[in-house]
Length: 376
Image 1 (cartoon, helix red, strand yellow):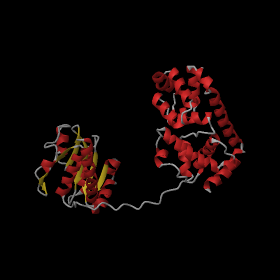
Image 2: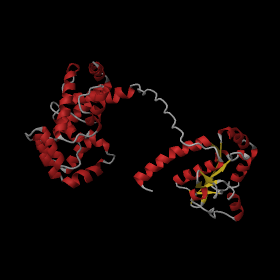
Image 3: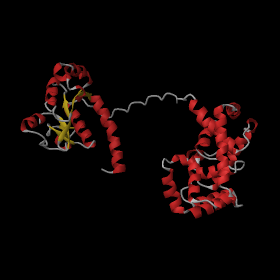
Image 4: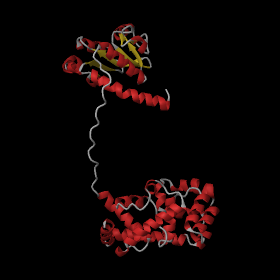
């Protein structure tokens, strides 16, 4: 019923100037190929004739430089004489079309299934269909499940598959005879109508709203200064930074922070005065011996002191973070909005302990999979 309802609309559309123009263009296409690919015309075909034929194919519009493709992918590997020979066999031998289809593809490089089906369709519109992106799009739109799904997703690759396409589209054509669709060229006009004028104007069917995923169960709890430093070091290591901590001798759950850090001493990235300040920052992630991300963990100490230490490195291409429990975020925002710190904008940020835990939990499996598949 859906197919027939569009058949009614198609018949009306054919009577419009646009519909008549599309129909006439298809018939001119048919006339061109019937004339250029008659048995005698193929025998007399020159390279320029072949070039004109291939450039006229709808399928050739895939290529922005058609001449380059013809020269390098068709004429060079095959030669004009072989192309002529195989075209004549494809169109005018008495073998079954599935056999001729396979032989042509085996013997001639560079011709896809769309090109072959287009040639067959416009030379023999009463026998063979055009198989390209239009029927592959229109059939699912019409909910006509008459071919295997892989035929719609991928290129067909054999003559037997092409025969199945012909048979399937024959059944569609038969349903549309009452609306003036008498051959496969007119069926392609019908597909063209739906593909270009109907489907693009359909309302988009949005999938049902996805239920939010449950947040991953928290497997770690950060509530101490040393715990925050440990996970910052581990996180920086996983992300490929050279990590450093001032608290080399402190431990967390039996692990010495100095053993977790990549750098045992701070890299000499600046003059001594700046170095002395940097050595007092809790955690620094370095890249090429330059500080990139600097963290002050403020479990109980005054946040403003940590901010002051961080911005001493303001002349370096680095970002600065206060890491603390969520209940200290408001105090951070209060200090950040003062005149002294406001100019640093997004260079200075707050990360809560819970956010640090979530980031660590999300990064660890990714890093493990990356190492497994891609190596270190």
